[in-house]
Length: 402
Image (cartoon, rainbow, N blue to C red; front, side, top):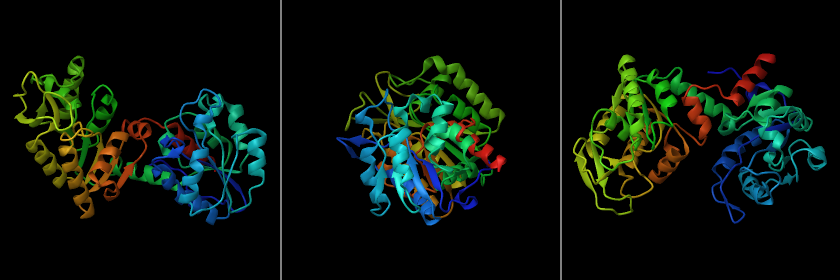
């Protein structure tokens, strides 16, 4: 568990707090269509206000090339007000300079302001010291509540924490505590459930978790590559044939580390990835040449279920089949509901994350029933890969300077 300060460790009374959030939310026709990240920020804002701070919220939004009105953070104001119980929020037309200074300078303790998109300035993504100093001039304390952006060495994430007293917000704290509990000092046995399309995109993740978990279940199209590497026919399925040697090395590493690997025993196949397509359930090794593996079969779901029953900690990243296209969502949904049942019963600590995983859990209706579901995509993956995250490292250094 990295050592960092939290809101409980800092005095913010009467001070302006620069709060780095991730408000990079989906917007359609000027309206936020999913306010989950905004709602998850609210406890940190409320805690800071209760401690007597004036709160200045900062975030990136999209990937603008300079100032772009279509990528303004202004649409976030309404759902942010709603998440804060209707509280008035001032909006600054820029994140540095006179426009920001005017709005922030007028803030009193207990008030909130939102700055315009950080990425309107190239200095944000370039981690430019001058841009970081301009941001730092707006506040007296820095709080990072954007774990989902912690893998970016950007000015508002890495450099700003070096310029002001810095602490983690409630969401950042919860993310780090959940992930640390899952991989650093977990209750065993630990099961990792990894799915998705390609082995090549998750090689580092697989190598890292193999050394830390007791069992690893692999689903999704990436399982096809491991089956192919063992000489099994996978028909017309998505398969990275050029990764076969890497797949064999992964299996050898698992054997060396005494990590049991659970691969598909049977599969649901179809001629096309289409909603309502005609399907067959076949044993692995009997996949027709003209068919594609699009979901796990019932025997494999049962095997994963048995592993879940035996486990005490679960780390899950990636769906088990083409869950966006029914009927190929059945395995993912069945496993998700079992995870929820075991978690509710107090038998399993369940940590899940990654964009497709969150969507799959939502489709199964169990998002709120797992121990922790991370909305952080890239940062969640890089943490599982054992990489140092610039945003977390900056908070650790800030704690050491105190």
